[in-house]
Length: 235
Image 1 (cartoon, helix red, strand yellow):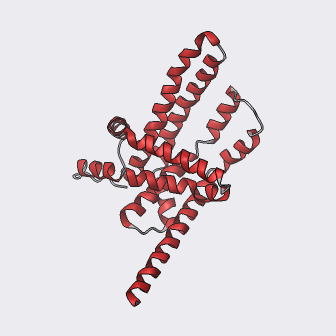
Image 2 (cartoon, rainbow, N blue to C red; image 1 turned 180 degrees about the vertical axis):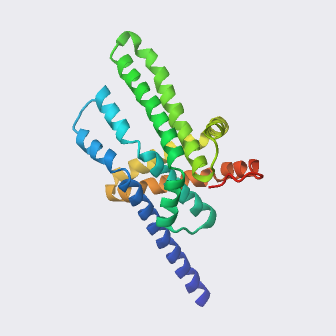
Image 3 (cartoon, one colour; image 1 turned 90 degrees about the vertical axis):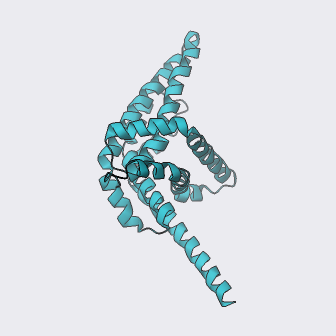
C-alpha cells in the first residue's frame, strides 16, 4: 500500500509540475509578444484582409521568433531530462538564440508577407485566380521549414547556412512531423473552442504544441547531435 501511495503521490506531483511548467512557459511567451496581441485586438473588427493590415500584423510578430525558439528549447530540455527551471532556462535560451531567431523569423515573415500580398492580388483578379496557387505553396513551404529550423537552432548553435540546409533536408525527409503538428494544433484549437475552454487555450496552447513538436523531433535532433558529435555545437 505504501508503494502504491508513493507512486500515486509521485504521479500527482509530476502532473502538477508539468501543468506549472506549461503555464509559466506559455505566460513568458505571450509577455514577450505583447505587440502582436495589441495589433491583433486592434484589427479584429476588420472583415477582410488588406495589404496594410497584413504588413502591420507581420511586423508586430517579429518578437515571436526568439520567444518561440526559447519555448522550444525549454520544451526540448523537458523531453530530454524531465525537469526544467522555467525562468532560468527560458531566458537563457532567449538570449543565446536571439540573433539567429530574429534572422530566420524576419526572413520568413518577409517571404510570407509578399506571398500573402500576391494571394490577395491574384484573388482579386478572376483571370489570374489559378496563379494564386504558387504563393500559397510558398507560404506552406516557409511555415513548414519553421517546424524544423527553430527546433534545430533551439538546440544547436550552427551557421545559418547549415541550419537552413538541415531544415530543408528534414522537411523533405520528415514532412509528416510538419503535417501532424499543424493537424494537432488545429484539432486542439477546435476542441477547446467547441467545449468553450478558451482560457485553457490561452494558458497552455503554445507550450503544449511546442512540447509535442520537440517530442516528435527528438529522433531528428539526436541524428543531428550524432552528425556533429566532434563539434561543440550544442547550445
